[in-house]
Figure 1 (spheres, rainbow, N blue to C red):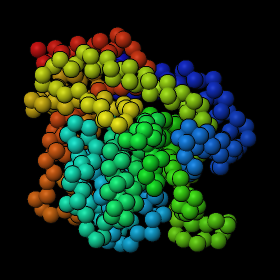
Figure 2 (figure 1 turned 135 degrees about the vertical axis):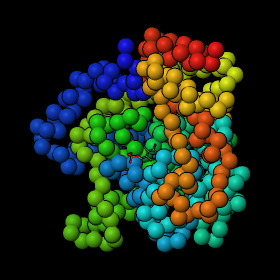
Figure 3 (figure 1 turned 90 degrees about the vertical axis):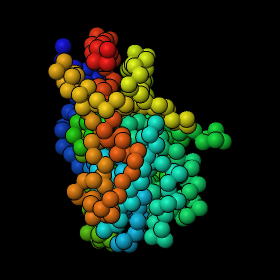
Length: 374
Ligand SMILES: *Cc1c(COP(=O)(O)O)cnc(C)c1O
């Protein structure tokens, strides 16, 4: 029995016929760039998300970069983002000559800590990038309130939470990625809606931002060979769009399967005093991109080693706060430190979670974790 973090092969075998047909059609038509499947997927995705515009692009990092480029920011402008996230969130900010202002996160839900936001606000602050980490939404209602008050843009990094629903206090429900000014997502193979290579998309309900984003992703041109602004070349391949078209139909079913796995872990692991199972955010559904435990007795690395010896894979997302990464030292004072981020980097461990529920595999995993703590 080989245990994997994600079972993409098992998932593929169940949709093989449709996926293969989609790929074959693309090859038959040699419509590799901007073929019909790109537009079709875009429209299906707009419908699924109930958003006015989806603009497909080459990957999730590009989506974030293009989003920042669309906001006409000036060098030195500050963008607030969590310090506990994947590097892409902050990397693009720095690449554009903007300043990433890294803030702490909540220890139970891992999303950006809003209490601290006022503290980091300066006259140069122009945007906030909440990250819907591990599969559930940040506190978007509060973030929007704060942003409105201080005239800030909100760019959602939704690479990990596609399909998740956020409920506002008035009962309005929106899909994550469609709540701020711009949402960004990734179709990296292991993401919840993953293709078979790289892919990404931006989402917005703003017509002007949508045209700008489309232009930037296409060399800054609206009309071929006439370039209004400096852009980039960022497209979703037709073959990837054909695959995504098939997989989008199964996305809700995939989220349910991930939840089934998470529930099973919860039931079997929540009794262990040394660990904390993932807390659900109040106003969000969870799509479990990751199932992430906190190991509270300082033995996270030991647990990981023990599991590895039993051939059970696990991952640490993320081992080092962004502000301690060499590339980001330039943005902080020497002794800069965020207590929750520091703590989480030593406590978190993500267990296998994917769409192919296998009782036998899950039993092995929970049994070994129980054994370790006994
Ligand atoms: C995966 C991911 C990205 C980047 O996506 P790519 O498609 O790999 O460029 C950005 N932000 C977060 C939080 C991610 O998990």
